Amino acid sequence: HDARLTIDPAFRVAPVRRRTFGTFVEHLGRCVYTGVYEPDHPGADEDGFRRDVLDLTRELGVSTVRYPGGNFVSGYRWEDGIGPKESRPRRLDLAWHSTETNEVGVDEFVRWCRKAGVEPMMAVNLGTRGIAEALDLLEYCNHPSGTALSDLRAANGAKEPHDIRMWCLGNEMDGPWQTGHKTAREYGRLAAETARAMRMVDPGLELVACGSSGSTMPTFGAWESTVLEETYDVVDFISCHAYYEEKDGDLGSFLACSTDMEYFIRSVVATADSVGARLKSRKRIDISFDEWNVWYLSRFQAAEPPRDWPVAPPLLEDHYHLADAVAFGGLLITLLRNSDRVTAASLAQLVNVIAPIMTEPGGRAWRQTTFHPFAQASRHAAGDVLRVEPVSPLYETAQYGEVPLLHAVATHADEGVTIFAVNRATDGPLSLEIDARALGGARITSATTLTGPDVYARNTADDPDRVAPRPNENVEQDPMRVLLPPVSWNVIHLS
Ligand code: AHR
Image (cartoon, rainbow, N blue to C red):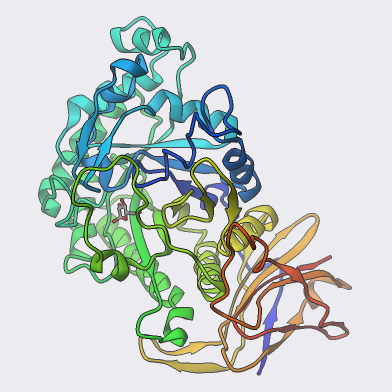
């Protein structure tokens, strides 16, 4: 197959948003306990955080971390997680049928964020709770001192305010599985009044209203419209959540799953803009794509839920293979391509739970296949996002009709241009020709590829580097050409 793209710094979409490279830590399964926090681990630091996970988080290039859920937040009492650990209550977590010990709460989380060099992003409970509790949490976290809650934070060891800028107004409130699930109108009213009150404390907060939990939700579109009618003036973002998996051995459709993400983003942008037009508002609402990933949700749904109420059971521990990483890379490309409106995103999640980082309790930590596209994109996407005008052969998919074999985006900074490209073809390589005349004399300075003979190859604790990016030697300079192997994720530098 032959494909072509054009690099021209004039085809600017938007700046690369650092917040595109956010992730998510939920009190779910082993994400917090034996993931980020394990005081008995031989490599734990003085706060009980796993050093190996902190190192991998930095290497992954994470910008923000959303916390504490997810479905968990809709039954969460944040006060349970502060103060002396020995007096913190154990509670039932209805979302995941687990017992929450509350050994980690907001103060530990923010401490961990500072060590990891990431920005915390907080969600408030609008399922079982409301405006008062959201205000209390905000005051506890962000008010400098001199009030009961801010002084309590200082007494608990955090003298400086946590200064959390970005707040999610609930989680997936459109989903019937959510504790305290609401209609769009009910949620929109509550979100608007919560946002208005939070802005009385600090008008500069960045607030996210819940959008849809997926583009196939029965209320998709209508939900965004109603919620934004209520919240337009008081929020900055509407959220999107999307998970994809290979179903019934249909690899071709799975590798094209970013087609749905693209449709999702375009539909939400159109809906938000139409509400803005009806309200005669000049304000623009952006997207926080604050849950996205490959997730074998159908396997999770088919499994028996835990019978008792275990503490930190292994849940949602998907082991990703090469094809998952390539589909995942396609999703990242789509997020970047839409950087004019998707200005924040969170990979769900960070460790153990549908995650790029895996750990053994008490043991090793390793990089899943999906770690690599994320880390490379976070490290190399810089400056401006460019449209690349790809010309590519199409292939037929059962789910999305005809889809291009090549999916790509580029970024441009002073150091040069980086192209991120996926070859979705399962039957052969794609010869990619790069037209960079506008750059005047640029050459390919490096190219790496994530691929392999077995699209279902995985990384494990014993074989952690089986699937990892390797140099691509199939490069020609004049004209510039790179051979992209079948089912591959590629990073190409020009300068
Ligand atoms: O990320 C796993 C779960 O997926 C989250 O808790 C929820 O928000 C979504 O349904």
